[in-house]
Image (cartoon, rainbow over all chains, first blue to last red):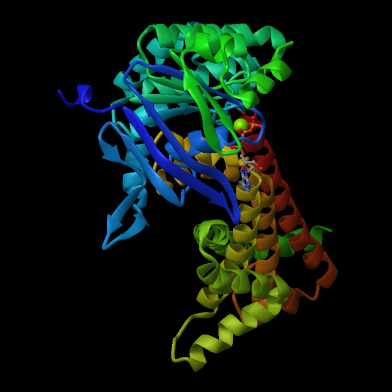
Length: 258
Length: 218
Ligand SMILES: Nc1ncnc2c1ncn2[C@@H]1O[C@H](COP(=O)(O)OP(=O)(O)OP(=O)(O)O)[C@@H](O)[C@H]1O
Ligand SMILES: [Mg+2]
């Protein structure tokens, strides 16, 4: 099969600027299937922007993102890059799931409705099948009894778990998680981290941005350290946390350790 | 009083016809105006600057022009252009353009009030732009636009009385005809005023009920 020949996600020379400010300055990153990679780095280093580029929520000015062998977001014609059309962007976006810091559940839909929307409209499943999948995923994140609740009736931790179910139910090749516990009260953090951990254990491919160093160490196969729009170090967690090679990572770890 | 009630009874059918026409005109204008307003509101938020500009001009012109001027314009301009509209059609056209601008503007406001994370979450699961509008943004925007939308309906019912100026036989014109026959000026104006008031209060109540029902879910 082809999947042994190439990584699931390959980012090559990714450049992104907001106006004149270059936020990603040539990022290279590859992820194999079933790999769990955490991105750490100080605020403003470009972690969120990187995930948003992979989910095609941002345009980028240079480099390629290849997902499962398909170059996403752009096509080249006569030597020039063109953003592809909306329909194709949508299809490519559905191949990656994204979980946001601020949950972003749809407030006018129930928990089950949130999970079902993409199943019905993007994967075009029938109502019964979509509902069955949604209920299975809500059960999977420990919310079997909450399918009929509206987001406003759920705690932050429960909302974030619905958001995880919503992303995973689409059966994405890759799941992006951007500081999924940062907006939560401290006592709700663990339930969400446990959910992510169990999804990782089930073999999902995850690209995680987190400030929870202990979690990054526990859950990841690899940890990536970003600084000022570049990847500075990339290695197994034991090495990154135990034996940082660069001055900047050592400093970052000193400052974040409590 | 007895004499007045007798006169009301005598004039019940013309008054009833006028009342019905008022409701019909307002209903037609709110229906067409809502469709128009949805298009306008969406363009104001999402269209590129060049496409957005004419919509912006339309909205500002409509909102800056007195309704009576709009009605007279809709009555006289099409006939100059060779288009033959009845007075009622011209009236509905004017009220539709008026409602479309107001609804467009309030939809723009409620669309822009939705946190950007909603659109991002919608795109992220792979919804196309029209799907995102239909299933994520519009349901939320329309809900928050509901109270001012009902208010636009009230404005249309009141504004439809201006159509008497171009000879549309709605409630006010019928009332004036009855007054011309009976000379009971104050009584019948008060009577017509009460009909407008009751209708608008009822409409308001319907709006509040719907709002409570819809609001309970979010
Ligand atoms: N929409 C935007 N417009 C302009 N500049 C932006 C925008 N979004 C992000 N930036 C800038 O890009 C840089 C990287 O931001 P990004 O959000 O990716 O950082 P981050 O690593 O996720 O930080 P944090 O840990 O605080 O979430 C920052 O300097 C930020 O100010
Ligand atoms: Mg961030």
